[in-house]
Length: 308
Image (cartoon, rainbow, N blue to C red; front, side, top):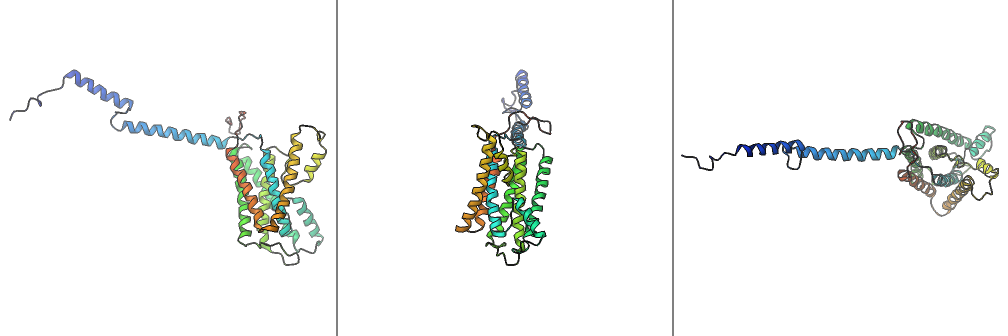
């Protein structure tokens, strides 16, 4: 049989050459009409670049140092938390969790056999003091190992740990693992109380370290004696503008109101309410560090890179 005339038609050499050049051009450019999956490779590469850029942006955000402007406000809230937990701890368990001056006095009295009641008060105070000291060492050394002192990720980690301590203490009281009623001074000591006391003392140590890291030494968050002294000896006490004086007054009032709130809550609701309230405040501070303004001063971190 004879082939049809259509089968006998051959493409012109010039047309074939142009068509081949078009295919080669498409493959080289990886364009929309490319062959050999070159378009897919191009699109995948673009997606990978976008993901890498997003990851780098997030990494830079958490590795940056925060701007300490208004960072005194979370520390004043921490003072309120100290009032809450110490008001609860002393009222219910006869021991302080944050203010170690009181615990030191109880330990010293215990060495002389006083007071007779509650029994082993010195033991609870000693454990709280030792936990507080250990907490200071761990928080400050961990902060130094993680890099620049005001790095966002370091602050988030510190306050997240403090929040977890408060959460566990609240759960222990709420679930009645620890008696949800104030201790009877003449009853045998309830050793389970040591767990929440230690947790509260541990998170208090983190607060003190944070005040030093953020360079607000006038807001120790857990003690008032030195704060009041520094306030009253300030030569610019009556000046119209004095940020340190304002912070000291705010910290004093915050701790006072926190303790008063703990006492009021103990009358109208469960003992755990003060711990839940403290946990909620610490959690809010932890979340606040995630979106806190970044230091734009171009300060160099330990890694040698510009903190932006």
